[in-house]
Image (cartoon, rainbow, N blue to C red; front, side):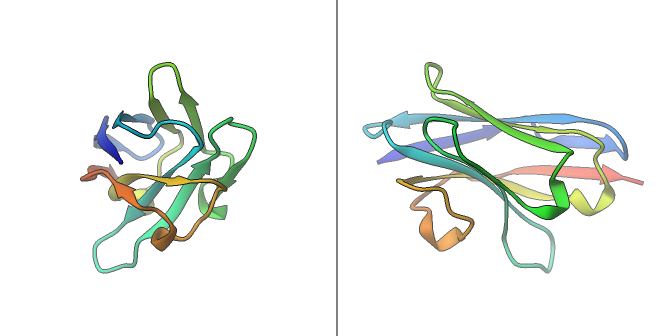
Length: 123
């Protein structure tokens, strides 16, 4: 229904910032909640931040509250993840995902996924 392409990953020093972008295309655009998930080596995929279609509802992992901000520009069909004060433990592959309806932190609730972008934070 929707195709997602992430960009903006890279290698940064601890304390630095990155902004990830996820561009969406396809037949379904309305009523899509969008989320960022990450998976570190040897660990399970976890929710980072999720935003409703309207932007009126957000969900953040406790580990990133106050440091990361999710936003979206529906006119551009793009969702962003601004990551500040990065820590080595933020190192992971970051995935963009989409689902219809309400926000959720469960990966299984999301039906569309991008291929991921690597974020590496050096100490």
